[in-house]
Image (cartoon, rainbow over all chains, first blue to last red; front, side, top):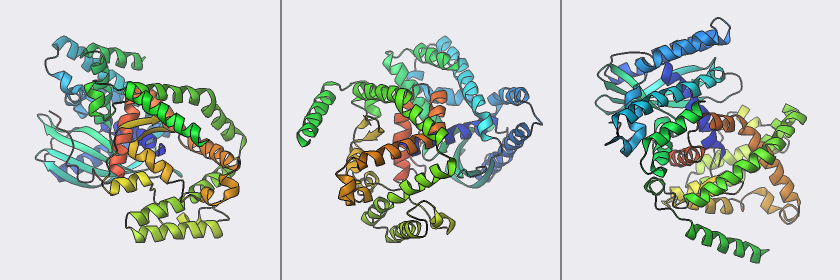
Length: 206
Length: 240
């Protein structure tokens, strides 16, 4: 019973890795959202494979990741989402500090996972349109060796700058939703103080 | 022994009742017993670091990989009657038949389950338990609980764990059920499952902001997905 949820965590990390490295696009339809995930994920896979083959060093891979993360994932939208009800009425300076630390936390965590997911391939298998500009793109991440394939669903939303991935799901577990539960729990325990979450994230980033 | 069980249950119920939280986030997550759950979570983490993980790593380092795979296959195969029973209870005879076929094939041709010949024959493996069966029948999960050594669960799934003992082959054989052999089986099972979880434990350590809440969230979402409640993506939250 415990195995599946914990296995899902590993899958989530793979999903976020691909999420953070996925590409920039201005498509608005479901088919374009599918193409967006497939095309940009392939770039990530190529980069990971190059890293694995020794053609790309880790520092370059990490630099690419950091250069692209803001323009590829809708970080401000995700940041607002993970704050939940505490976003309303929050002090702008506190919010800005939280945004900075949250992004750094995410980048640091998933950088460490890079080596685990090199060599995997992703196939987009379909999509669902939840609402105009709100899509779920289904995919399968094919594991290397004896590992099992993992189904990954991507929530892709359109915004001012085109499509962006805002969340990823493996085995029923949505990454941003999980992070929101963690962050709002910390803030709630601190009586609504957002800086408590910022401190916790900073501690985890070290 | 039964009196001891009863006493434990009474003490547990008393502890839970006196350790409820009124915090909004915990209640939204259906975790009214968060204070006591966090204490059990801390205990489990400490036990894992001090005893369980070192034993599992010693098992990995001393037993060759093919032997460990064989052990894992046997344990998985032994659980197939549980899966079979639950699939039948859910009215899924086709999948139940496939599971029975797996069990028969792996037990006979696979030498007591050492070899997973059923997978090579493309017979699909299902994961099922009585907690999911109750969920299939419409029973809600109830409050979240963290079980000592066993980890995340809820009231429904905890009940399911007890029920799943009965269709398990180790329960059928009195010489196993009523003797220390059952603890040998449980020990091997614990080592195997801990080793299977090794990388995911490490990922949890690396990625969590609050490991307790992360595991709670992951457990709830995963079980909901296993019940097929997220298939249409209608219940996803707004992002703005």
